[in-house]
Image (cartoon, rainbow, N blue to C red; front, side, top):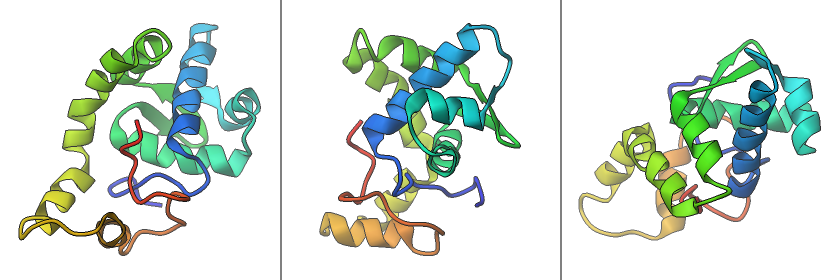
Length: 144
């Protein structure tokens, strides 16, 4: 899957994605430069494939770095992971510029330029042409 355009995987909801970012940060703080996908999957209790799908979006968003099934954390990802357990409002402030810079923000603005539309319709437009399954039960990742 191209990292140029990614949305959340149907396999991993926002709460699980947050757990992945926090777990990755904790594993890296335990001494590694990069974390293997299998170790991360075991840590969060998700499948190897689920973690891989999740990481595509998290990389696209700018929270993590990927390299052939091994993962690192960006400075923004580290700040987010450290803040989330203590202050979710401050953690969301870390996400704000990342979300604003994500390709989907400009695409949503374009699709909404003529006025509002149902969330499901906007979600379908954003997913158009992307591989994979949309996030279960939602058309956005704004649940963060």
